[in-house]
Image (cartoon, rainbow, N blue to C red; front, side, top):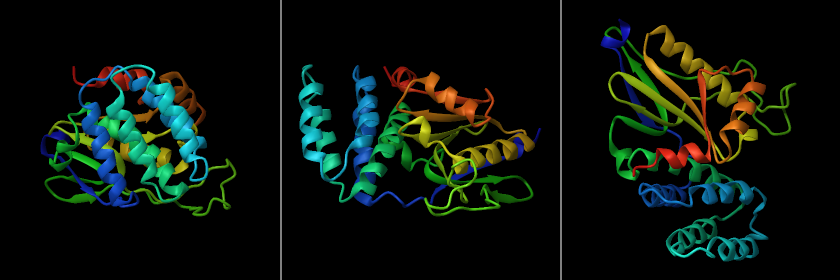
Length: 249
């Protein structure tokens, strides 16, 4: 079998998230590495904050904190959320934070931020497949990139090259790779093409693997989006309920 002489490695190469948001994402991951009953409510925050921006941020935070804090025992996460959003300097950073919050839940489910220092895990990382004879970086090259939001494909999607996975793990025999988005509608061309490419490469090398699309929404909504994009059941959906169930007891 090819897999007996094949290894995967990860190298963080996605530096689109500013350092202060990287640090906050790790704080979220460490907060949720202990199972919390309010993960579904946290996921709803990720969804509803789509409408938040630097102009309405303080008002939105106040309303959210009052409602979320109506249940006791939530001060720690409320303080962290407020700190996180207030640290964003513009609307682009707010959007980046929301995606990082989803990623932080996946990281939490695997043990928290400490795992990111281990070679078996990757976050915003390029995947390299090493066999006995060669090493290959898994990069999807788009044949017709549309880099600007104003330049879309016929399907309405922006597409471009992709060379990193949001989160990945490799135990020496089996790979698990995760694409994370705040909401299913944000799963687009480059994410789909990259994951299809990675699946093709791993299948060709007989590498055992699972590919997940993760959103702060219901699994059914994610599955509907994947179906619309022509992805079959071999691409798995993880929603808010599944994320909550994955957390360490």
